[in-house]
Image 1 (spheres, rainbow, N blue to C red):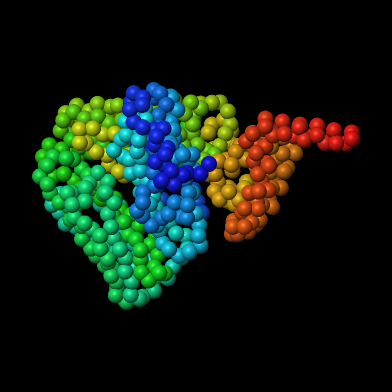
Image 2: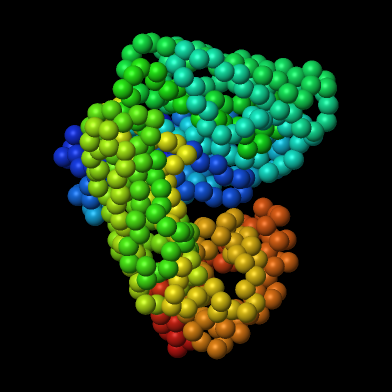
Length: 481
């Protein structure tokens, strides 16, 4: 079932009202920014830190602002819009599909938010900036000169550059701000404006101003957005949004947390434990805490809690002037072959006492090297996921149906000689067919329809067997008549 519209989410909220169950832990986004190219998929990760007790849920909402439209520019695969994390689990991944409309429109954006948490406290990381990256080229592009996180002190004014590439001509782009923890008019001045370019102008600047309210409030955030370029053929590539940190200038700041990996990445499957370090920078005053939490990876090569690593979350206490702490995650060796590499995420979240997180160092994607034989090497004709007809039909190698077909290949076909010959032939013939199918929306729909019986048989073998048995029995009765 597809993600319902925002109005229907209001109905779902009746089943997710806070206070129904005792709150255990904090639920929030793992990442606060996500960029997906048209025609591809990505995953929104929601984590529950500080506890594994009880089932928790939270509503995922699509904001009414933004230039990317739900159902037109992107889809979210989530029944009733409710993200659920089961008892004993720490994370959930929600699939987002960026739709390809073959129009030159530049990068578009939308804002996703979390609300109405049940069984856990809603964290402060409850807004996510979603960028849909246009894959169609345009004669003129306008973008931020840099996409790096911008830091600005209270009371400071900074100029930002927008650059043009492509042909000359009069152009313009609009700017606006999306509040995070910072409040418009209280923490920063309105940045909504139109930035013009003359016919041969390659760079233009505009200013942002952080207001000084003389209050001790820690670092706060908002997101700068470019949108609605003119003329119509102006595109805005990957530099659409830029995160801004407004740094509190009052003395005795509690600091900013960053996550580091101790040692190399990837790690061998038999490594045992992996150590991580949390550093506290830009201040060390007062006693504060921060959580760490693990989250399953996405796609067919994802590392899964309980199978490939031990799920873990805890709250680390930092005493006054303490600047460093470590923790460890256990990697499980299953003594079985598999993909050459699996991966999962380790996050820091939920800082307290007005401390904050370094947005560029809140997550480490830990990669685990397989040491019991790689399924990736079983087929000498393997040419990568892009040549799958299934990948072309379903739009991405990370689609769950494609992942299930790939697992069927690895666990069933590749264990038998006829299956190995079939796979080898398939890989030899499929690339040009897949490329042709991927380029035509109608052919993708036909390919999905033709693959659907196989997908159903792989995903629901028991049901498929019952249906085949019933059909065979019906045919025998018909023949007897």
